[in-house]
Amino acid sequence: MIFRNIILFLLILASYPAIADSNSFAPPSGKTLLLVGQDRDTIARYVRTTRNIPGGTMFYTSIQELKGLGGSTEYGSGPQDGKALLRSYPNAVIQVGLYMVGGLGNTIDGKYDANLKALAQWIKKAKRPVYLRIGYEFDYPSNNYDPQEYQQAFRYVVDYLRKEGVRNAAFVWHSYCVDNPDQQWMDWYPGNDYVDWFGVSIFSTAQVTTASNFLELARERGKPFMICESTPQGMYTLRGKIDWFNHVFQFIKDRNVEAFCYINSNWDIMPMFRGQQWGDARIEKYPQIKDLWLKEIKQDRYLKSSPDLFHSLGWKGK
Image (tube, rainbow, N blue to C red):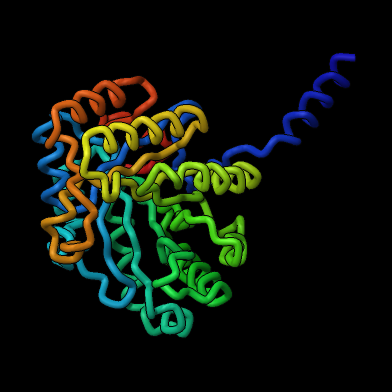
C-alpha cells in the first residue's frame, strides 16, 4: 500500500510542469530577482540615491559590433559598460540585451563567430549568472525578424556558446508584449531546449493583460518568467506613474513573476529618445514614487545584491 501511494504521488507530481533548474538560474519559489538598468550612470545614481544595490544590472550590446563588454560605449541612451558593472556590483547578476536587427542571416552563416567567441569568453569570466536576451523583442514590428530565421539565429547563438563551454548563461526569449491577431508568438519560438526564460516588456498598464497571457505559455512549458524591460512610458503625471507601479507590483505578486527589470532613466534627455515623449522614469525624482518603491522592494520577495545571491539562484561556480 505504501509503495503504491508513493507511485501515485510521483505520477501526480509529474503531471505538473516544473521550472527547469538547468541553466535557468531561477530564484526560489515566491521570490523575485530585482534588476535595475539600463546604463552605467543611471544604475550608479539609483544605488546612490536609494542606498540599495539591486540583485542585478543590465546593459546592451550587438551581435554585429559587440561594443560595451570591455569598456564604455555610447549609443545615445547612456554609457553601456559591462566591465564597469561587473566590477562595481560583484554580488549582482547581469542581464544583457543582444541586439540582432539586420544580423540574423549573417549570424546563421557564421560571419559573427569571432564576436560570439568573445562573448562566450566574457560571460565565462563574469563568474556569475548572466541572462542573455537573444534578439530581444522578437515580435517588435520595426525589428522585422522573420520567424524562421529568428529561430535559427537564436539556436545558433545558444549552440555556439554551449560549444565554447559557457555554463553560467540563461537564454531569454523576450516579447515586445503587444496583442496582434496577425502574429502568433510561438511562430518565433526556438524550442524548449534553447529557451530558459520567457520575458516581456511592460511600458503601459494595458500590457499587463498581454503579459499575463504570455506568462501562461511559460508556465505550460515549465519556464520562469521575466519582466525584461519596464518603465512608465509617456507618464507625465504623478498619478499616472503611481498607477503604473501599482499595476506592475500587483502583477508580480499575483503571478509570481521570477524576475523584474526596471529601467530607471530620464528618457527625455537621452539623444536616442529625445522628442519621443517617454518621460522621466527615475524613482529618485519623485518622493512619493521613491517611498512607494522602497516600501515594495524591502519585502522578502525581492532578491537584491548579497554574498548569498548566486548560490540561491543555483550558481555553483566560483
